[in-house]
Image 1 (cartoon, rainbow, N blue to C red):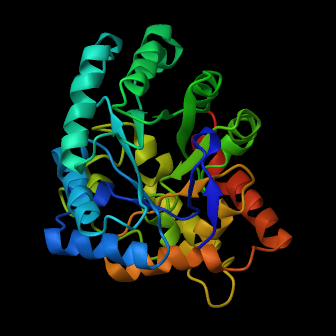
Image 2: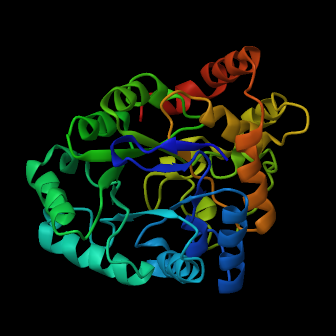
Length: 327
């Protein structure tokens, strides 16, 4: 699989990584053996980048990854985790003492001395403008608790603020054929600054797989049930903020753009990989089959210009009015 330079870090990661939110049980229950099998299948398919967070299953996802790393010490996996959601979302909670405690817990979960990358996990907007916060992050690097830091953001404005900070190594942002706004300013600014772009929610919580109908029912402990309208956290995290019924209709159209031999999900991932400035895309997988299919998207031929134009037209016609002004 193609490996791309991760901005200022001087390391390379696979263009298709693995998001592991689902291994923390926020997408329905996933057993330990199943989780470890998914991780191993992804690596065998060429994935070298895992993304997790300290709150995914209250550390469960990190612990699974830690067990896998111990079983495959020579696999060369780059692990990005996140911090900041273990306390109420108040700017005053983003302190050096809390950062030390959170990263120490993640280091223990993952079984590493130094975290490859820690990201602020969609903090309050004002945090991105705080010099004290970024000084604290620099301290974590100096103390070798982390090798580098980045941010996971909800809005393009937050991303641009973070990119302007000289120590920011990466920005993780929602980017997919149903969320095009980051292409206007964020991705070009990151590319110019040498900041890595991690594309998250790449399949719009599964909408872009084309597998759902308006009658699809998700488990009660699946965020696609309990956060559909932003009841528990930012609505953009679920279906990219697109209304479910409207999203299903748009997904049917998108599926028609998939090239022969590729699934709609693979077409969506290939579209993201093609965007100049994107470092890695991090689809989740709950089964080995999903992990293999996601990784295979990296090897598809580039989508032709006509398909790229059709994605833009579909977004403008069906999606833009719902989401463009919010993020």
